[in-house]
Length: 112
View 1: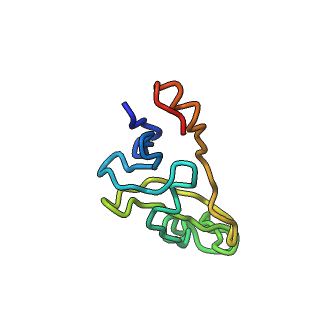
View 2 (view 1 turned 120 degrees about the vertical axis):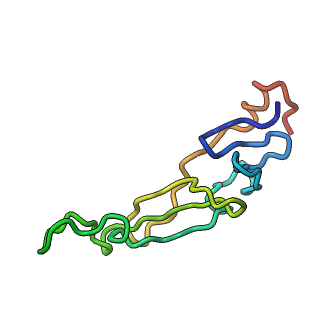
């Protein structure tokens, strides 16, 4: 089979060498690139996700000058694929890098 499950909602189609949403089959871009570039992105204020617990200087809510929450959604079905907590200005991480030729070899597919 040419579709390999990678995470709960991500797969790689080894025939077309693309990332796919496992829920709806949406193409998320080349499998040798970052799947997040094919996603819808929500850059969230961390206080919206983690509201203050107490009043004062130390509220237990993340400081938005130190932390941002970035959510990645499938553009086809809007399933949440990944969430990152990053410092402001930090680039999107490339968290999954697959050895495509080796995976094709293991699956008995031709390597191109």
